[in-house]
Image: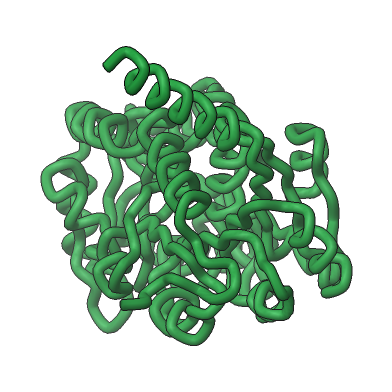
Length: 372
């Protein structure tokens, strides 16, 4: 019996040693900074506890908007590289045991399929878009061994996948509160906040257009996109005569200041998966007013204030009511829920378990994901 236990212990310790030396690469599909990039940098950083982690980013074309993730990747990771061609990507793949990747580019799956013996492959799905989730995974199942979805709603659409939410580092939530609208209390106005990339589907322009009807102020910390930029929103607020009611913070990795300086964060998108800003707000304890999109109503039915969409835009009446109900208790409810779901230990433990399962059982000559 002692000999058997000794053998079992030796097997377990040998497996742990092998796993800790496994070469895992996290691949970023571009250099544009967004919620997915913020989340995956945290995952890459945390997985260094378990594996030999390297980080790569595809540089197929220069980023059209700033800021990019290049500087932060270089600062956070010793083994970091930019990949500018498919041949360079192939060389990266030859040297690793497992690839953790996301995005919708064809370079990555084509490079994986071209190898006679490819590394293990885990695809992460961040959004609710079918072209990134169910359709992409079905098309490229030959080079995918496992799929992790940030949203449980999306996870149910992809048989065999698992759901692991995003997490965020407290390092980027340390900013202090600022009194941006000093006459708020005297006038009884609350302040809504918008945080994220300035896409039209997020309805940030609608917010600016309706601030007067909502009877509140608005603070925006946004990243310009090809669709919409800060200059556009500033010009709009001037034309509408509400420039004194709208303030802009410079884009920053630290979002603690905006979250601590507002009464509620507005997530008023027409569609989402599980937006990173909801996790960031919850970690700080900032109340969230949201449309019923993606995983939010399922995960936070009693921890967020929800508003209706009418032909793709939030209901002004619903949003007014939600604003009137906002108080610190809503922020504390959300903080407790987000801490339980999205703590760093929970999320990294989920990824480490998934990586180990693929390293133990993936089929490098053909995808095992979805196979019967």
